[in-house]
Image (cartoon, rainbow, N blue to C red; front, top):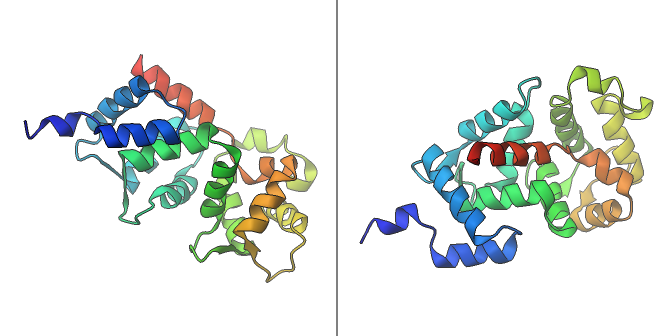
Length: 203
């Protein structure tokens, strides 16, 4: 009887994930099985996570962005993602509630984890997003946001900050909720593709 738990989700975790995400019990159980197949230890390492991202973006360089995404979801900072952290990551990046999504986006941009965002941190994340946009697509971006520097400057100016100011979480969330254009600038909108690929894999 001791081993049954390793291949099945515990009822507590299943209930928690069902109430905190939009996934059904059947979906969660299916994902858990494929998660264990890929990661028999029950954990995804940073390298594995980067590998997953690399597979989704063969024409780009998603390593830096994947590393930041990984950091923002590794809530206990143990250098791995367990199934719960992984599912929450999938849920938030592919369609979580706006507030949850923005709390996650703040954590993504708060690179050093000190509770505020600096201009340098915005530049670092925006640069990692640009690495994922194919060069041809970058040419189609508006003139005032077609480089990481211009896009970071546009975000910073929107928040009305001076060079060495900081953005708090509350400010960040309010600002983005009030302006859909900023929401577009701070995120990379490809996770839907990732979700579709995951679905294909399972069929």
